[in-house]
Image 1 (cartoon, helix red, strand yellow):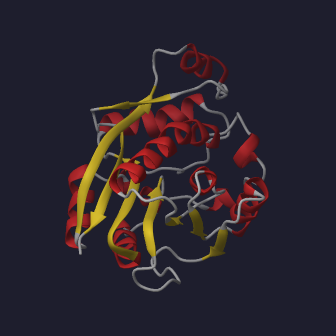
Image 2 (tube, one colour):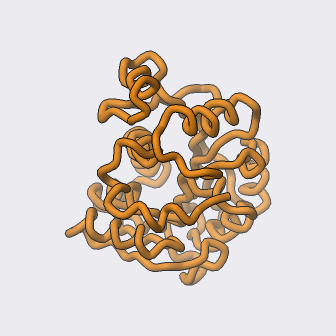
Length: 243
């Protein structure tokens, strides 16, 4: 697994089209809106204290902070956190370098904990899920997005991105670290968290932007993802910490 390239992205986090980070931005437009709706549905009441584990350049926190939530983020990449501060200003995000296995906050400190596009980048995702459970208040929500482990996911998410998006780093994703939905459900249940919602997520194969990417190896601004009942490629979900 190669996570070192995130430290070198700099402003490309927000500006590059010839890099898989552009797919992450496109995915985020749908993913973060879904998280916001589920927070409102499952945890109504306005401002929530939100922690993003592996926050990168702050895409999710920026979205939620604009909606009035209090955003906290941890990541191992100082450069990524600098971009989060720059592009989220003047939103008051609270960011720090930290290890996802030992997040430096007290037990039951947050209403919402996120681990989006992150669990497939660590060797022990169950430890991140355990940290999320520790950090959540009773009734709080854990949101995750990750990739399913199967041959089709390998073909589209790993090889497809390598073939059709410029500047894809070697070993950005590796199939053994992808997580089956049943496995992630088990991680949550062992930590006293009950799955409340789960949906699949995939590129919109019918849009011209998808075929333009295949031809140019760059991600157009209008590239879109769609929700789907199939969890075959990737999936997004929410789990509630029980009292």
